[in-house]
Image (cartoon, rainbow, N blue to C red; front, side):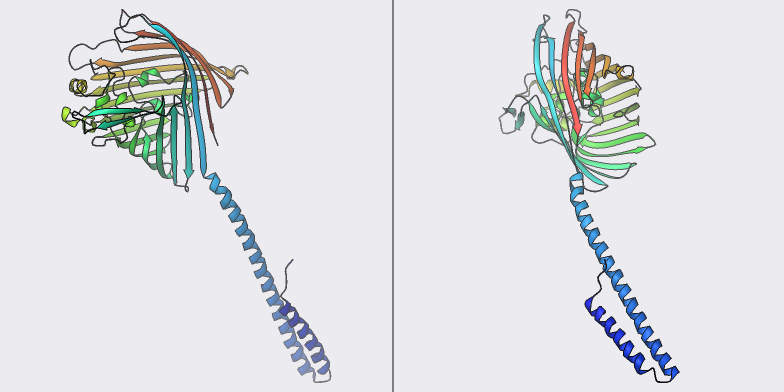
Length: 462
């Protein structure tokens, strides 16, 4: 109900009374004078009506503005929480494997183990439509971690490790993104490298095996992340990325996992005297279905060594990755091939042999060439029955010593894993996995071994 000011009401009453007396007083006068007086009174009444209408409209606008202000304040309060996001995933596994004590051992020993493999938490905040950030923290093996520090004041220089607990707590991602449109975006901070499918498909429901693929772990850092800057975007179902990031440190290259141990995550400070460059192009989307793609990595490594006087060669690492996925209806098929080269591998081997504190480790050879691949195929039976089960078969192959600069490459680290298993989803956010298989080493005197694994994984977002 519209309220009329008290003074305006008094004005109307006074005008009405004045009009009555004026009319009586003028009733005996000439008709022209009476008509003029009446016209004047009518004009004044019309003006008052217009004033009342304006006041009512002004009051209505004020009420609407007040209601809008209250609504905006409520919306602002709720949207502040809507800008936050939280995601998490994790897995716990049981394995029964046959192990060899060392590279000369040919009699395996079976061991069974439980492992709280990882718990990952992801925090995000959307500043506005173009700017956002995300932080991903991984807790591995239920522990806190080991800090590795280089002591340059020692007589020869050495690495000192402080063991704080059995596992690790690592920042796997800490990036800020600016994306004005789908075609172009920029991200910087600690970012994932688009080399290897594990950097994109690392949640338990995104791969069929109980553990992430062994072939990739024998060649590349797991879910590879570095400090740097990158651009990315999508054009007509093509997805591209290009990055400049911190490089690897060749002091930690090893026979059994090629350059994977050269990831500088274990150091308090990351040396950046040598940068690396990465490009990737995909058609389709590996995270949501079918896709094909390729990536290329290039970077020198010797400049990032702490003992730079022990090696003058570049130690250039080049890696080519080709991958494909077909996910359609009940059918799941994914595969990847990795090929890498390392220049000056003999010089790095000799330099690493005499670096104090780098143990345990095998310095017999470093591969000048390395390769790995996997193929996994599955059938989602929920398309044929009411049971949410996927059955799968998998093959992983790795050879971190495909070639060496001098001599003959040992076959001891050339491994093939063949397995089959099931994924059961009691609810969409939880997967229970079982896998059994055989591991073959490309050395005739080493017998094949078999393994069995169980795993439970989860993922959710709020």
